[in-house]
Image 1 (tube, rainbow, N blue to C red):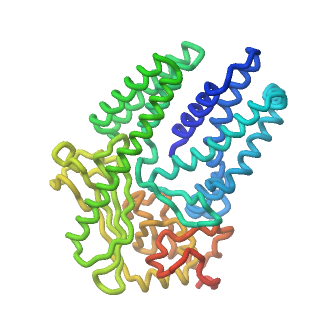
Image 2 (cartoon, helix red, strand yellow):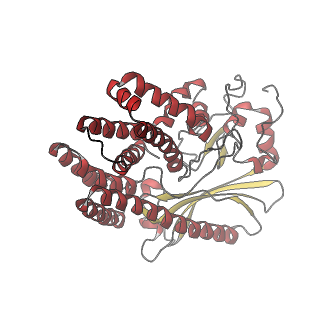
Image 3 (cartoon, rainbow, N blue to C red):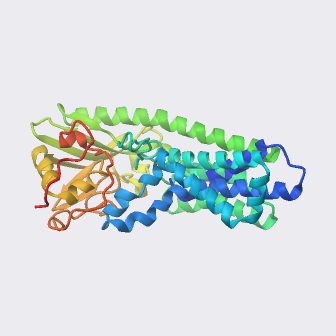
Length: 416
């Protein structure tokens, strides 16, 4: 997820923990505890993204693909991150150090907030099509939620309208209201949101804002329930979208065997979905990747009205589903390329929907081959470059295409 979402979730976590604790008799201690829990929640919910400093370890795009959402996005490596966060707090914040030394309840609350903040970061990242591998090194496989868009204004609206009333200064509250009210309007004007999505966000803002007028706990509770409900709706809608995409592929290419259907919803919109398919057959030794867009309610929202900024197809006459791109390849050639080109093999530790055109590989979850994105690798031009290292041992999302029963790396070989 985006770091605005992570930050708001962390602040909401700190606020909820603070309000669950008994009030200390000393007002100064209460202020320090409140600030400490807010800062802990905020930092813990963003700490895993510090792995961006590791991206220079490999040439682009491999540095980002291999090392972002890497070791810091695992449950095991969350523990040293919590230790680092607590150590920095202890060393750099004298008032917090005194409070932590004197109050066992505060120590437990801060440690719990830091741990839960890390887990929430991984959980929110797991909701989208990008994926995480939280159980590494015990399980190196990527896990994908395929439920919400990677930048989701529903989370901003829910937690934003719950947290703004808690700001102490009136000027900050006014600025917060303006930001969270104007952002959806701006995104709609720019073509990122449908007007129906904007109306839904407005209703959500009124709901959470009205609950916040009752009290902070009511506002935060309403925000939390709204987000849980939204994820539940997305889960049901995603299941329907996957079934619709599978049926469309079976009709378009009879005899093909589906290996995967990655999904990406549109922001604040459970009706429009971008999808990809990875399949083998029907011809022997062949595989195919395809990309399309679908609507779960074509009478209300045909695919032609799904925002083009995120994969919609303006002007497409198909009301329910439109295919946008298809590419076929040889399984034998795909496996040989992975065996002989270690740049491509490294890239396959990330790629879920691989497109190979003209010596260039692109994961078309994130854009068409004609529009290079952060995943695009010119593997042919780098065929004689040294093999990338250090290379994390993530599982291969397309181990099925590679004909591997496990996720381990192939035997060591020299670059040819």
